[in-house]
Image 1: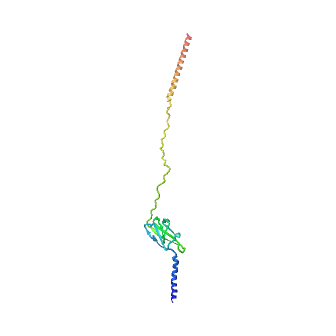
Image 2: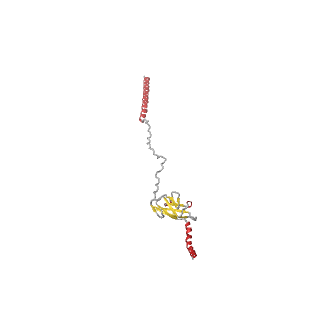
Image 3: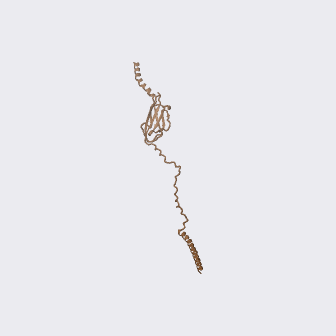
Length: 198
């Protein structure tokens, strides 16, 4: 009778225990800070993930991405027993995704993610407004100097009347001289004729 009860008890307990052994070999996430689905106004300095068993650093990979798929992980993760912390570099307000991939005791990797929303982000750096100074100095137009009018000849031509007067005076002297000679010749001829008649 007791033997039958022992067999019956084993038949009930063994099926319950067998599935638990493989399940215990798989690591899994048990909690996080910030919590999955949380909305936070103040950005945390670190994101912490808590697992069922201590994850091995060699087989653990954690990424943090923010809006526009910008990386928000500020450095390599640190391990403390079953906790893994990642420095957080906040960016714009919006949804942040923490994806993890860890190894398990049975060799099968376990992956998953948590999501939280940062309601107040950091302001984007304004673009630089300082322009590079130009190497070439601005050229200023030289004032135009007025051109002097062409110089007129200082020598004025002699008046035509003066030239005519000079020629006229010289011709008058010649005419008087010729008249005197003719008068003298005429007088000489007249005296000769008178002396020849007498």
